[in-house]
Image (tube, rainbow, N blue to C red; front, side, top):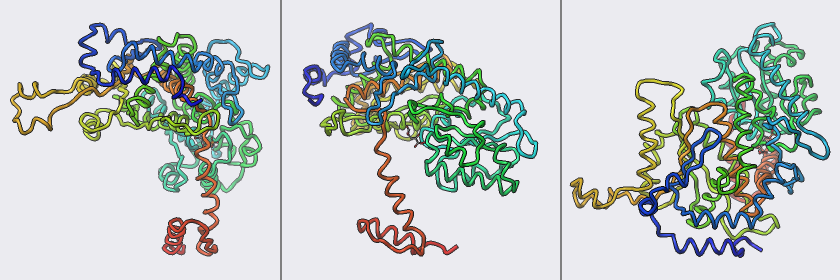
Length: 541
Ligand code: G6Q
């Protein structure tokens, strides 16, 4: 039975028809305690949901639906290591990577915490060696450059966190990331580096990903062209992977391999060995604080009742807009320059997880699933796309993320930044009506263009400062929100079959691209003509 036939879902539809014309202005006028009633605080975050188009009854009905979908049991099943990633027959235990409770987590009769802690210990020891200059390159020089080669889940998390926590990083180290198979990425990242001072981290769960292995092979050639000795690979490469044999075949000493496990999904892996570049950049203590932030939010998610559970409320409100108001997107608007890669990171977390069109029974869904995630740091976005959010024809729920204190105190920059943070949410919610424009003596012919209808929803996330701990908690909130929504849409959130077809076709096309390869012309006429054009215009070098 599709979710739309469930009684609790129908109750939500009826409720929506009753309240769809409600305005935030009246909701606030009718309830003086609204702000307090719709705010939750925990894990260093103050989360104000009050500027959303929901009433207590809306939340009650959403929670009833969540109970019908057995959300509580699903959460418990994930933490218990059930194979909830059914289409890949795997457990989903990224929560074990940051389990700082000291309690075991058992999978198939084995406590997996021993492995997790042992890898973390080895990562700490490598990070210390590099930070102290004990780890030497092949010619005996200290390592100054650390280049992570990975893509998707083996790149986006480390890049985002490195940028976000740069303030806490060891500035004498140059940390770089290469993901794109486009040679420009590797070339530009290596442009000003000395091979003798460079260490590559090849980050790939499978160690077969085309982009990563192509970049890693080119990086190896760069090192070997310089040293001309195979032995040099040992000093300049380490691997993060589950694939021991492939790491060996690449020539990396398996002592320098940091393992993780098939119960860690790529996009949920940043606190596993995949975080090695972060451990090096930030140091073991900050990395632990980051994991502790995740751990606190995991504990919150696992223990709080649904109505007081931040990721659950985020998920429920998202469903309300996505499936009842018909919103297609969610804007992530961090008011902190350090978080400039957060929207890109959350794009993968959310869109790869919940971009699914078939339910858990394998039946195409007849309702909307995962939203489009996008965004840019404030205030840049205000001078670009906020126009559409304020006065366009679409409802775009927005997550505003800000901090009470800046890490870089400079004059009144932070007050100005945060004045914008508060003002934008206020303007979106309450707008500006005709009466106010008249009072401001705006010319009558201009009035229609200057009306802000308001009623544009937003959620405010505020923490005292950006720290490894607050950031870890925030990321875990979003991870769990995605899980909640997957349960409520009855879809599987932890596979990603949608990335396979393109890979398969690219493999076939690659064989056709050399100039002298026979034209197969086996595709549609558009693809055929693009390939022919490409081949006809290639330089012969
Ligand atoms: C994430 C996905 C995907 C994956 C990359 C890299 O959940 O599985 O983004 O992380 O395709 O895969 P490897 O780490 O195996 O190279």
